Length: 165
Image 1: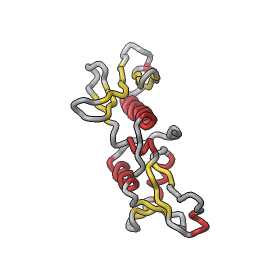
Image 2: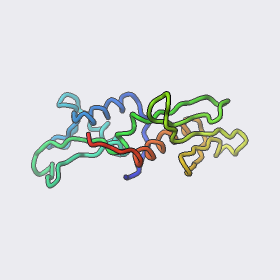
Image 3: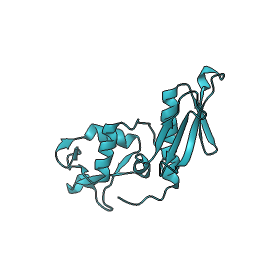
Image 4: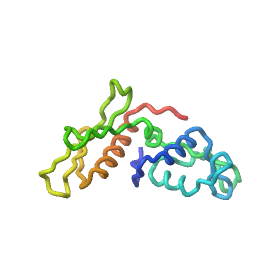
């Protein structure tokens, strides 16, 4: 699996576009423009998801879309398929840990990682993100949420059995 080169927050609009991609409704035409079922042009948004590693152009083997004039569907990557499954729970600064990334049944979740707030640490390392044996540090709470979510998605995509859409 390729690690996503950039990070995007999973906004409702991005999640909705990813759901359209997973359902096979987003395609690239022969002119190189991307559409949702021919209705709405989404080229800029799809390029953003592609740069973040959420989607890839699912061209058919042996076909060059530009030379054949055929349509090509976008497909979610393994990373893109787990985005909707990973949840980050924020318990506040007074709790320990402050944030937890989990998947599965909310009543019996599988914890992927957590965030610890270290108020006595230098300002550059106040938030520690732990996923398995790997940890990193960031400066802000928002960055800690994003880093936890991003790394949990990478870890879960690498572990989870992924079926083709």
